[in-house]
Length: 79
Image (cartoon, rainbow, N blue to C red):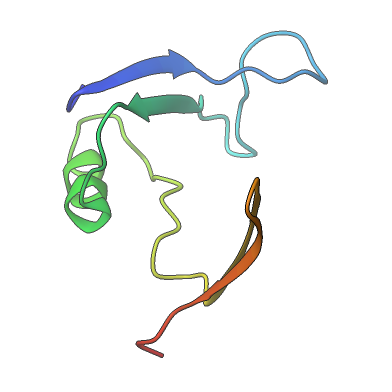
């Protein structure tokens, strides 16, 4: 779907698939290439059966990234 490998989300703390508080199944989508999140979110929301997405873009104002090169703090500039 839209170039992603899709699978049902499972949980390590319970048997079976992850179900929301409202009884909806959760799915995970893995993309090989970077995608435009705003456009992807709009496309997903217009698919039959999609209730919502968890693309939390444009929400975070700061990210702390830890890697082999140390710690980097990234901050949004458009706020």
